[in-house]
Amino acid sequence: MPTTYKILSNILLSRLTPYAEEIIGDRQCGFGRSRSTTGRSYKNILIEFGIPMKPVRIIKICLKERYGRVRIGKNLSDMFPIRNALKQRDALSLLFFNFAFEYAIRMVQVIQDW
Image (cartoon, rainbow, N blue to C red; front, side):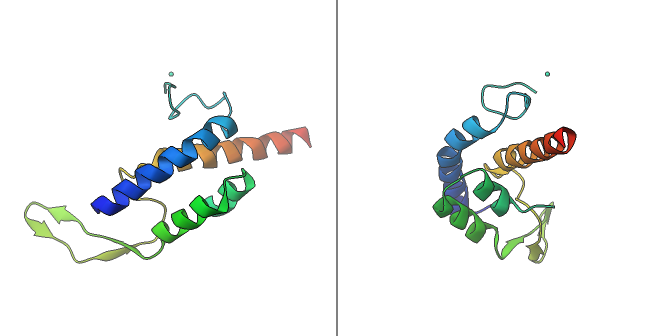
């Protein structure tokens, strides 16, 4: 993962964390800050949760046209496109998981209340 992307990813994480702390319910006890672990796109979910458009656009740009390589021993594979989600060890991975999980929980509650 390029160093510049790691820096940008961590900046986005620090900017999105306050929103996550307000949005993500107490029923999610795992993967959150200071917590223990005892259909729709991320863009749409972030917008629905009221995340400002500027970080949403930056995230969208970061997720477009991404490529990876695999190293096995001293051999490095050809580049291949990454078509889904985030790279491993991306600072935003757990935050995005929590947003998606919170969205799913809310959808289940709407269905149950219906």
